Length: 136
Image 1: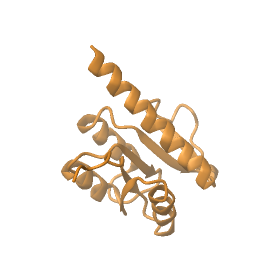
Image 2 (image 1 turned 90 degrees about the vertical axis):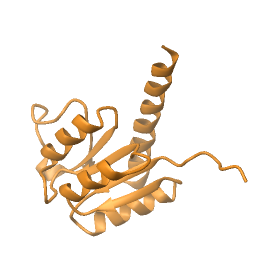
Image 3 (image 1 turned 90 degrees about the horizontal axis):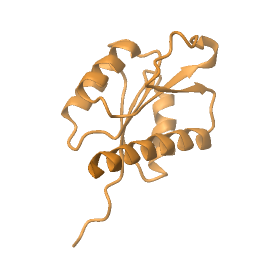
């Protein structure tokens, strides 16, 4: 029996139990394959051992294990093309000078629709980059 298209794989990182639960549910309902972990070290290990690799990483700004900046830097070394969606608390809103230009930021509170739209746009951008890469 032939397999259908493979669902995009998403890694969700957050140390607040309810946040990854909600994000995971919202993304699984859209057909994505989601793995949730509770800290930066677990995220890095999951990313490094995932087969096939993750297509997107969703991480909170405030995570245990590794700081979000450390996690993002390490992911950029090992997986430079993987899009990263950083979830930040509006109350802790970073200045534009503190934000990485290669990471999309979504501020809490956000709706499920906003989350799904951001994820779809990031994954679509990745697909376009892969398509352009294969044309050369």
